[in-house]
Image (cartoon, rainbow, N blue to C red):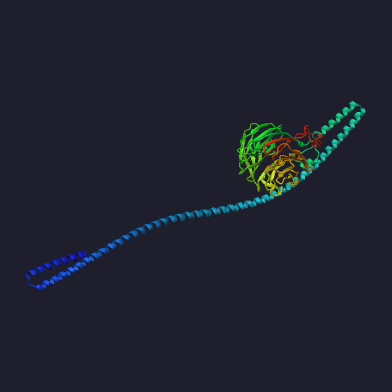
Length: 559
């Protein structure tokens, strides 16, 4: 604007001077003025040219200034956006910090609560330990008193037995005297006297001699009772062999009455047989192989332990599955029904757990944790203890009521010699175990002390499973070998009294001795089931005949 005004004024002045010069030139009155005016006009023209140059330069500078201003404005806007984003980020971070602070406060409160709970639990633990110590002392005192009472009862029983023996001796003497008198007086008088004497002996031997179910098996074996449990007939021959299962037959078990035999196989079935080896029913429902089988004490249900981590409970009369009990986290290797309660059983699995089950409801009642996998188990006759044989070669006894380890026979079989079979005799005084050391060991269930060990040339365990059984009189033991042979030992002499062959040539995986004393059943890895019997006459062995010569039934008592 300023340059334009100055240019316009200079143009007007130049025009005026040119006009004036023209007037002067025209008038030719004053040449000097004309020259001065022309010089002035030339000077003004030069100044105008310089002014235009300055204007052009200033325009260029103005353009550069506008470009710089645009850059500055863009930078300012970008900086403003970055500031706004930073402010939003700061607000977000402040929110997160507040949330973290709340989380930290909650954690501190939870820690304080856990700390107080831990203190309370520690106090409870100390109180429980004190109570346990007190109870342990009371149990020790009660155990001492119980042992004393048992000893007193045993002494009294021995005295009564002596009296009975004396009465029997007197009766025999009376019979001989009466017979002599009858011979002297005549045949009629002799017959009357002999009948009276025999009647007296029958009265004495018919049950007046006391017998208690809970007496020590050692006392029972040392005494010579008039009425005894069923005595085992030493098997000498194969009575019958059937192809029971398609695949391995892992185990077998007699019903408590000895009337039926159950077998478990890899073909996912449990099969029930009568005493003559005829199949009664096949029980289905398992999803995989059945490793062990057992009966409830009333014979009303059959129990099967399977590879599918479950236990099936069947009704053997209908074949219907009553319960499918799950809870193990691995294969179930063993199952055993309680000898006292028809609604209880125990099981063992590869998850190193023993479980007690309520069969009325089909649920687990308790779980016991083990240090080693249990492959076989049994229960004492009073149902108070569970005996379990483990992979580490130890035999452990568990208190069913407290759920705790009652006693451990460590390394009963040498370390790493797995216990493959565990069974308790019908009298309850002895427990038989078979290990991979190819040894059979007898342990007293009351003192927990090993009493005997059995071995035989040619006897060897065939694998994880081994068949073993105690005779119902606990005087004989049987076990199957890897080559299909079944060995029979007499415990009193620790000698082999029978080597049974002809049932098969594959490893024997299961053995069970009938509570009636005969037959002995076995099953092997080919699926065959064998019944082994005594002499063809069907009578008892000489040992059994000597045992029962004074009378009494060969049928076992209900207890």
